[in-house]
Length: 419
Ligand SMILES: Cc1cc2nc3c(=O)[nH]c(=O)nc-3n(C[C@H](O)[C@H](O)[C@H](O)COP(=O)(O)OP(=O)(O)OC[C@H]3O[C@@H](n4cnc5c(N)ncnc54)[C@H](O)[C@@H]3O)c2cc1C
Ligand SMILES: *[C@@H]1O[C@H](CO)[C@@H](O)[C@H](O)[C@H]1NC(C)=O
Ligand SMILES: *[C@@H]1O[C@H](CO)[C@@H](O)[C@H](O)[C@H]1NC(C)=O
Ligand SMILES: *[C@@H]1O[C@H](CO)[C@@H](O)[C@H](O)[C@H]1NC(C)=O
View 1 (cartoon, rainbow, N blue to C red):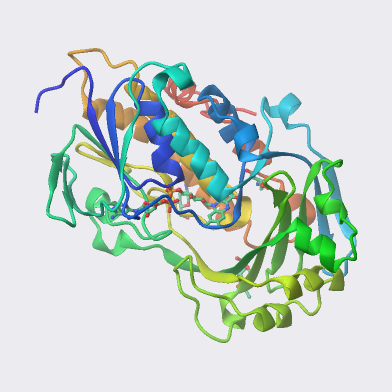
View 2: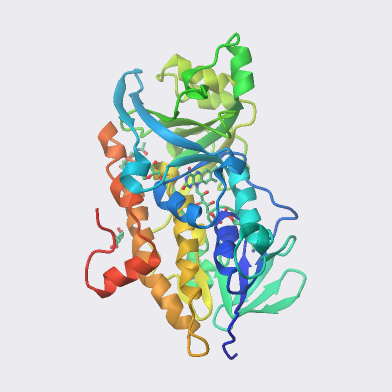
């Protein structure tokens, strides 16, 4: 295949990573997203994006008012006896150049989809909108040649294939890129997470009309964490999203404490009585919220050792396909945002002498060590012995200067991340 000035780009999966990658690439290339789902469906839970991701989103025309994003103003960390162990006021804009945002996943995905597919006039950018094809399951990829086969039998040829995740942490493309069939799924981390959200209105009604501090829109949004600080590694994380209309919960427990082995599916149901029974030593005010929950999900948290490569031939892995990690540092989605930014390397290709493989090698030189470090830090943070431990990686997390600056630093022989 020769190298035209606009690449045909095929993105496998229309989740957070794929839609944002489409936004970056559409300015200069012809982009199609192949999404297995029949429509745009996203898990009904919250997601936080750190300043390292928000800085990038702002450069891409992200409109936080459409998302009802809440800038994080405070964090409060409690122990299971209900004692406050750490209180921090966040000054992310001053210290890191952008806010740290709480979002609802469905709202965020809608906004990424708008950035991928709205008209270029509306977005005031060049190029053409990406196309998204729903009900298009990719069943095979020739990663070297850039040939995709859909479940329908249709065959598509692309200059560049962006492979992302499937079913949370499973990935069909990962083993093809890395050359190891064992890598199609990530491994259990030993912990599982109960997830649910509550509507602010419901909480108010159950509270006799009173609005808890956590949902008070006149206060700044706060990340509340309650940690067992014992050998069980249990924790409860609560924060508001969608303009304080929703309160999001993540309750992490060891697998070994569960009645039944958990499924890795993101849609498996969790049992409320079991959740309550696993946190009887936590503050009653917290457990009270569990009693209100109606739609609880339970899934096994998985991760993976850093991969030996993200690239092969015409194909590159991004998002969870490249670096699955547990949510202990809330960096999974933010790393997908950094990956999308990395695809900027395709914005200034030098027609006709560029080489897709060379650009992908540059992508891999930055993105793989960066995400590997975050994966490793995340693994270390499963066991949290003190409140200070939890934020010990914040500076590393939040000071990513973008792919071009990272390449410059690597080539100059200096540290890629400096803080
Ligand atoms: C409930 C929840 C909360 C989280 N909270 C945070 C957080 O607070 N902060 C944070 O940074 N990260 C968080 N994460 C992690 C973050 O959401 C993920 O890292 C991120 O969604 C990864 O994006 P992705 O696009 O790679 O994968 P996904 O979002 O899993 O998208 C994969 C997409 O590919 C499609 N697909 C799969 N297989 C095929 C196929 N064969 N053909 C075509 N399409 C296919 C799927 O239908 C899906 O749409 C959270 C994750 C979950 C589930
Ligand atoms: C808690 O975390 C530590 C360190 O990762 C681990 O050794 C220990 O087994 C964990 N405890 C449980 C109950 O999973
Ligand atoms: C991450 O951990 C793996 C396995 O423990 C190790 O081989 C690798 O060097 C670490 N990578 C980084 C970037 O720290
Ligand atoms: C890393 O950043 C996330 C936000 O993206 C934050 O929640 C987390 O506490 C940070 N981790 C550490 C250890 O500082």
